[in-house]
Amino acid sequence: MKQKISFLLFAFVLITLITNACKTDKYSQGKILYTNFCVNCHGENGGNLAKLIPPLANSDYLLKEKETVACLIYYGYHGKMTVNGVEYDQQMPPNPNLNDIEIANIINYINNHFGNENGYTKLQDVQKYLNNCVVGSEGMIEGE
Image (tube, rainbow, N blue to C red; front, side, top):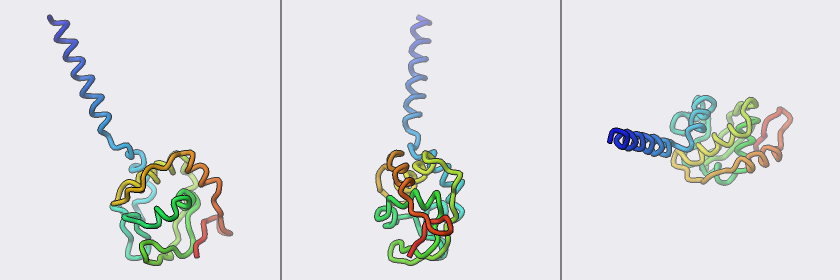
């Protein structure tokens, strides 16, 4: 009888652990990376910063320029950019120490948070986008 109770208790604990593990946010790695590399400019809620930094929240740019986002994260950006009808002209610093997987995690986090519902971007797509980046004279993506 003790063995049966022990087995049932073990099974209950195991099922509880598995269930809780499945409930974790699948974008948790992207959130950590966003917090470490992006939050200082884009804020915790992905909003704009005094019309200097473009918003990530409800951003039309993320949908229209999805093939450019990985390049912006890696190489940074210099020039004018229009997001949600507002023009921004603040330089975005590069993040050359981020690898393809980390960039994919950040993209998937921002694409599925802050009011965005832009779906999932595969690692292979991020790698393709990074291979096709057009980098300007200052080693950054150049805008308008």
